[in-house]
Length: 165
Image 1: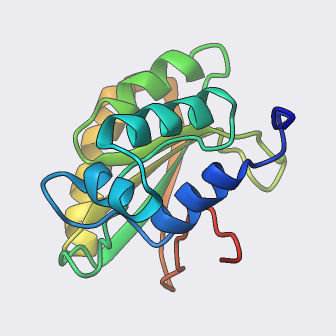
Image 2: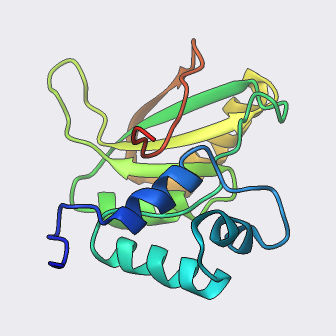
């Protein structure tokens, strides 16, 4: 039997993806439950998933909360026009803020789109999001030339890797 190539899934890897693609069970030991489905111990499941991550087959295993069901119905992507030479350091400052769920750098598209730093905020109201954005503006100080908040207008279904079972 040959080893799988970098981009080929082994039968075991396919089983693990199929067993986890709809989410991990909400149990104290979810990897033990997955192991029971695929015939591995909890430690073997964790080790196999770690190998899959190292190979780049999966990026991460993380909780993906449904913000709306938690009452966070105002979701705003804040966009910032900051100095390109400072954008990485400023992005780290924003990403460390407790209200920011994700933060990243994007290219400008001048003259229409001057923003190069994005940070997602969630709140129970637009006023709450605006208040958080003001705190971010204060963090950025004079490095911020302009900003805006783009509020979500639709709920997009977020899913991870899916394979046919």
